[in-house]
Length: 591
Image (cartoon, rainbow, N blue to C red; front, side, top):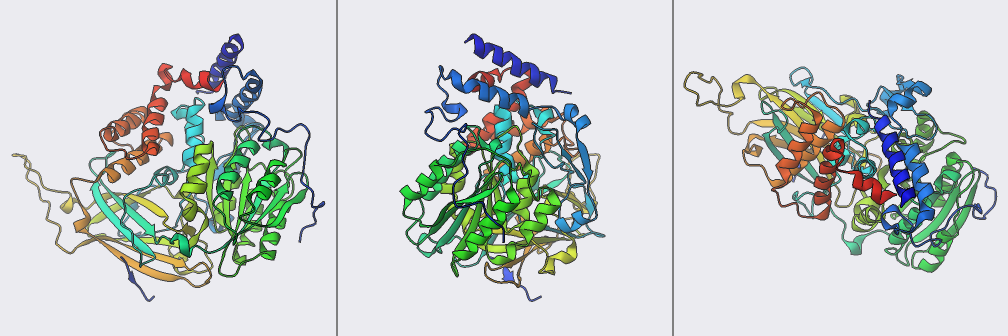
């Protein structure tokens, strides 16, 4: 117990030091051998019954040094590490890469790498009526944020952690209408903006058609597993093994499974096994041990080559990368990885990126791989998240129904004076990219939901009427049949190279003074996410803490429906209670 208290005080001291229905519109790498990479010093999944922090027994003191070391390394303040880091300014190539950031910090060894997010500003609807961006349903920011809060981060810490607001919002399911016929269904609501009562908030909910279980294509899956030395921690390779077991349980005799490993070299741990041979697959996973450098480039080349060898025509051909993103051999820069993975996306092989661990986690690498390789990206911080991503949402994670999906919203300047998109900063495209089939969009899976938000500043004449005696309003009624905007969707079928187009007008009938619980909840998540990014657009609040507290207040009376929404409230309460010391419990539980 004394050791726990010492560890707790050390962690607190270090953390304290860090505070400073739509209608159609016309318009060959060598490998060392086939052996599994091993390192005698690594722990396997069965080495201990206490594999993750939440399962640590009160007497599991052997686990403490690892947790302590990781916690110390993981939460260094940016103000401390920036002196040793190199700020990498964006080049003209960034427009091609579609990164909505100007620079990112390559942090000192032992800390984590995130792209700086520069939030979207307002645009004039008359001179710049088009908002164009690639669809994005990644959720990594949410589970990564959860991990940070559970280990003691406050709002100031999160401002340096690349929190992508759209990934927080898209983490949750919503009751959007679904279609079993059309590939896309669209919901739209306009209501008062909760963080600026002078403005309105538009929320678009786009849902893809869900593939029935009997219609799911056979899968050819190649697991690309990072077994470098940085993966030895309990919340990395051991957690990864258990996560893969959850996924493997849902595979069938018609599926094919291979496992490629990479560290200083590369290897094939399993080749072409039948999906129903679960014992053989899991035996191969159980033998994986961590040690060595990180030759991600060699692993990618080998994995895609194996996926091509077992390619299933009209099937689900996919590489699943599981890593902490710490590439240090071969191609490792953002641009190099973009070039490498972009070459692979035309092969008909899709990509899922699963992030693990803390301390040296490289979010920039993982997102680069997903965004440039027909992929999706999730961060696995515990076994519950693995179940959510790989079991509960297996169809949307693994079975692509629309690739290179792009959205373009044209605003009506007669109603909307200015608009500002909430999130999607690193998915922005030029207007002309919408109809350019060579420009990458995003990949959407079966039953996927995409939530898109815009803050709207209306023209003065449509701002609304007032009943005040001495202030006569000149506002006009918005004519029936008027439209706020038009949503256009460009997408390709998974096996096609030419885009198809859909168009959906959003009319004034979508405005309401009594929004649904889903609208209120999604807006609250966005508001909290803006506070985490120190947004300059939280007009109605004096501080970020006040904005988060207001978000909590707005949803505590709602029917939260599931444990994920309930957890969000708990996390936000934890976040704003930190400065008063009320979340020290997290440290005690962790150590």
